[in-house]
Length: 251
Length: 252
Image (cartoon, rainbow over all chains, first blue to last red; front, side):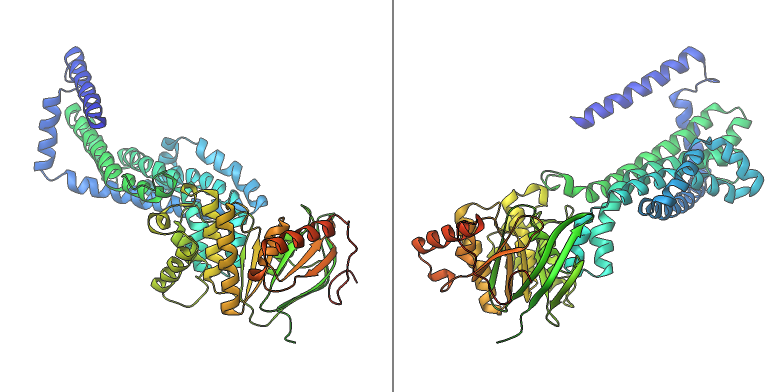
């Protein structure tokens, strides 16, 4: 039933798209058939694979850098009040700077691939930082006391006590940051010419080829949906199994 | 006489400005169950935490026998919410250099001995009742095969028949392994059913108010004897009976 409603929602969206096309013309909004043809052409010419790989690399590397720095800085800040008071306003300021401004600055500072990766990292890092601060601040002292009383080795403290607690806070931020990293990467690629889907969109825009632009949009949206279904949902279910009333047995 | 496994010598402790324990001197002999009783806030749990090495006395000396392996059970079961019952018990064994499979097997055996088995082992703490959680915490302490069991109100959430089964289980562990237990309880009958000796603390700051070496072995005590001894303990706690001092127990 859930899938039926989902399919109905997508059909509604496609219907509105087609209506928009008929109302405003192909230049403003290409038809579904034109978009499908542009998509097939991109696939036949072998443009989708390399573009997708480049965007995945940019998004992945930037997300990883933001996640590592955000987690380390956030955890340290959560454990040390002075550090938190110092870094909290910095994170707010970084979050307040529009991603597009970071793209422009990064292009001036680095250019190319590094500009894209930097932009993704700086856009996602503060989100992970905020989650890590919350996670570290809410560490259960009782559990740590229990673990110490049982003389748990450091590896057990990390993997059984602190790790799962932190992951409970970090995972939603990491997942949000992951989806965001693809969108920011495409935007930065569009301006930087560093390859990837954004570069493809920039080329289509230069040729005023709205159908190809929409084809690239379809590619990125499909990639994100597939990643969400094949990776994030699976991970979320696995990590949050202990929160379910049935322990995830029905899933 | 063998050396005590745990010895408090004029121990005092305070949380901030609030004195919790004062002048505690007591030996905990090997192979016996000692019950700690006293009003809420008198420092019973603090004594357990000190015995577990989680708190350091503000003054006085606490001696633990060399190589003494302790296993605590706290008032709050303190189970890892993201681990199932079996893994929670196995967690207590992580300090031991044994393979993971053996840890799990030992955890399963102890859990079954405390009355949890089958699908219950795969349940997470929030899916278990309060009594079940308490049994998982007790199993975690028992699985360690400790020299010194430190149990803070371990039978509180259990119904009477189950509590009596757990009393017997703890006693068997103590006897089979020649281990020692220090148990906090508010229930004089429970103390008489399980303990060899009872220490009564006064209201905060906790001082040793009375000490009672109980006659015979707990399993041989009849219902009438249990009732009579419990009544005596309650009277001692209420100050209705004179306190009999003990050479190693009491304020110095």
